[in-house]
Length: 435
Image (tube, rainbow, N blue to C red):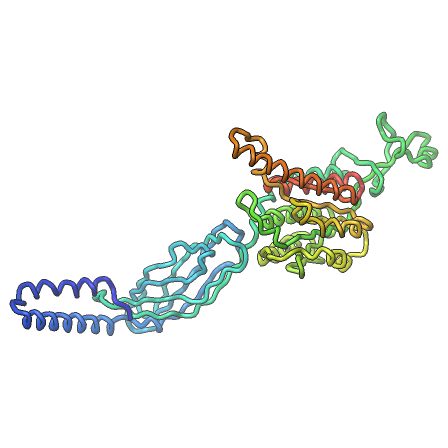
């Protein structure tokens, strides 16, 4: 049972008869007692006439998935199985991060009928957002007291990464089609698959001349090539403590998700096989053996449940994890942080094992605020800040140089530019026949 503001107001209204009839202390006490008794009787009658909230059955309908930042509607269907008219306040007890907003609704449901309560959800965190219970507060006809019950109505939605980087996909697919020979542009170079023969024109690489075909046709013929298909691409995501740092008000991990999704979508269109692994000291997420739309669907499902772990990345275990995925030559894309030389020691120690049999690309987010700080040198504080920013950029450059010396490529860019930059590097490697 709960008391409403109307009940409190009615009790306070008892001051009026005390003023008029409470001429003595005894009279005032008697008037007060009679007034309180009257209010309690009215409250009891109101409570008895209120519909039972336990006579309400609840059914919940909601989508299974939603992208971060998008809105969906969770719908509650309340059925009044009692014999009294239900006038109630319904509260849907979602987690705060589900973004339920106004989760209290007033309903009026006649006996034997069903009412609908929509709740708009705009989640602001990835992962599974859950709800277990619904509270129904049934008010009496006088509005003095309410009967309250908490009913089980479990539900959950999985909040997926937003994948804002998909806007870069059409332009990169167009470039892939050019490389693949579906337009007039043909790519020639070592390590690519033979496509066709055509007549030699000025400017063609003489190494592409097919001398046997030239002898048969009595004209100089050159080979045209296309990028190899069905290559292996392994995306390794570092979910250790450095992935929790925020750059441009976004965790490094979320930027890595965007880059991984764009690369996976592009490689899938190119006909390559993509494997995804999120790892720190144990496997946090893995996707293998999927392609096309199923690949992205499984990747976002896996990513939705991954959060940064406040642990150091166990780099010595990485080569074994890669061998567990493929023993053939593959493009290994490592999404991690290379901000400091000390933190990158583990990565540098295992790179020779990876570059020995694979093409390796290390991608890292670069903080735009650090770059901007180097250009502002007005006062003393700004000069010190600029010096610290320059030192940070020198650390990144030093680690990048060490990575390149060990035979891997490096891609560094701001959160907004890292996904397209990584996709461009993939296309460049494919054009050069390095996959």
